[in-house]
Every structure is written in structure tokens, then in C-alpha cells.
Image 1: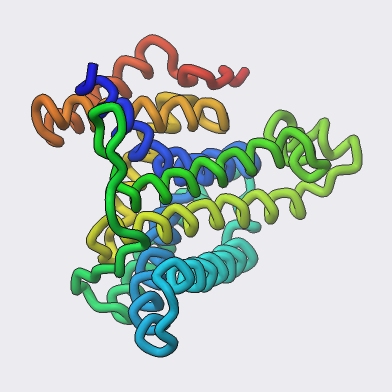
Image 2: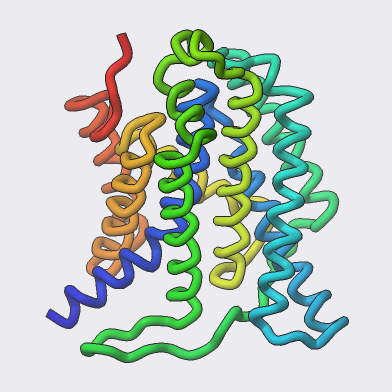
Length: 294
């Protein structure tokens, strides 16, 4: 029972950031019908900015670690939003609902931005000062306090986004465009404005996920690549464009990584993830919670 609780806790702690990152990718696809391969660069940019800013702010002002991280995360998210807005205005707005054109553009942007990150930050591995230190021991399980804080922040952001999409006028407009662009336009919804909003929110989620993960991992300009692969697995399993599907897929991938990684190794867990993708594509190509297009 103790082992089961520990593995369940590990799944929750890992899955929070996976869900947050994948939700940004699936939201962009749902609204704009494009797949942004440069999404991982937003993640990497935020992680790098948090890593650099944490050391700089901490040395300059001597603030508590929590305040240093909050300031660094804010700067990282703003940086990603500016980058996302520029990418949309000068690129993606010309390829809305164009899978081929957006694919070529996003791959090109991925290569360009990765080159810029390597030039600005070099390929050196960076560390980030811990957000908090210590662990909680309850019911025979050990919860790393830093991972718990990051998970709580990620789940809180996920809950806020879900409430925004369900309750707010802009959220309903996003859902309407994702469901049927033509019908939404007939109701007076400006598709380009809503697409910009969806892209910025998706970029924000990627930046938030990257910033939150920075204290937990070694940071490089390519740190977002592995998370991007997992995000694609998540949205394929859960269903392209489905927010509940991204949540389900995120925790499914985290469960595989936690359980199989514990009993075997992470390589076996990765193989099982891709086997799950193949099984879902064979049985239900639209994903577990996705809708088949006609």
C-alpha cells in the first residue's frame, strides 16, 4: 500500500507540468488547426530565463528564494508572450487552418529559435536555485516539497484555464471557434482576434510549464525537446484539441513514467508510451476524448 501511494504521488507530481504544457499545444491546435512544433522553444526559453534571472536577482537583491523565483518566472512568462506574439503576427496569422504551411513555418521557427538560444545562452547545462527545500513525510510516503509546490502551481493554472474556458465570454468564444469556425463567425466572433488570444494563452502555458520545471531539472536550450515529444504523445492519446483529453493523457503518461520507470527503467517506459500511441491510433484514431472529424 505504501508503494502504491508513493507511485500515485509521483504520478501526480510529474503529471501536473505535463498537463500544463500539453494543454497549451492542444489549445493552439483546437483554435487555429495548426501544430506548433516551436512550442518546445517557448518551454526552453522560459526555463533558461528563470535559471539566469534566479541567479542574477538573488545575487543583486538578496531576496528570499520564493520571491526570486516569482520575479524570474514573471519575466520568463512575459518574454515568452512577447516571443509568441511576434511569432503569430509575423508568421502564423498567414497560415491559419493550413496544416502544411504552418508545419513548414513552425519547423523553420523551431530551427531558427533554437539557434538563437544556443547563441545567447550557449549549450552549457545550467542549474536553478531551489524554490524551497525539504520534504514532507506522510503515511509512509515522501513528498519533495519543491515538487509539491510546482505541482500545486501547475494544477492551479490548469484549473484556472479550465474555468476560464467554461465560464468567461472569451473562453466560450475560444471553444466556439474550436468547434466550428464558420458558425462562430456567423455569431459575430472575430476569428483572427480569437486565434491570437488562443496562441498567446498556449504560449503562456508553455512558458509557465518551462519556468516551473527549471528548479527541478538541468536546463539547456534543448530542454523543451523531450517535453514536446511527450506533449505530442499526450494529445494523440487524449485527442487533438481536447482539453479534458490533455489532462487525461498527461496523467496517463506520468503514470507510465512513474510506475514502469520504478520497476524497470525510463527507456522501457518510453517504449510503452509509444506502444500506447500505436494502440490508440489503431483503435480510436481521434484519441480517447477527441471527436472524429467529418
